[in-house]
Length: 187
Image 1: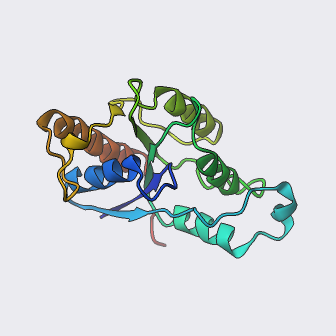
Image 2: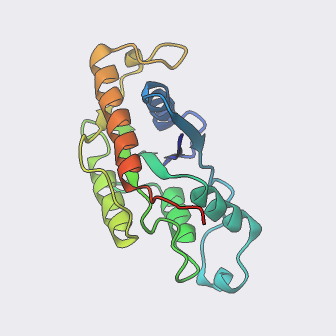
């Protein structure tokens, strides 16, 4: 069983990225357990916390350690990633030498009401994750323009083209995580 965490880049209670993240988890192949990685309670990161890491940040890092890989479904704010997501990534990289994303396979998707569907945010996120040494899925890319009619009232994908895109992404993300998950040998 592969355990994949998913991160929703927007903290909005009406996040369209959460709708898409849930659709991706439903479309994934069998043999995968998904868990949402919650970061909304993290305070704003400061290096002053490195010597006495707060409990909420230790829990965030433990949650990241508990998964084999991560799917990030992010919004785009001002042509970049949301500040809260960047803050969570900052916490995950500290204290120095304890980068939670080091070697952790990641797949990125995003949805926006705009026509570029989070392309700029995803580019910034790829740069950050590259610096954090996280192997990041290259294809298929999901720059989805949100259309409410593509999703039914139960959150299931109603548009066959959108379902195909998200299904391909889910399969590729799971394969990417399986490919990059380290093998552990019991002694």
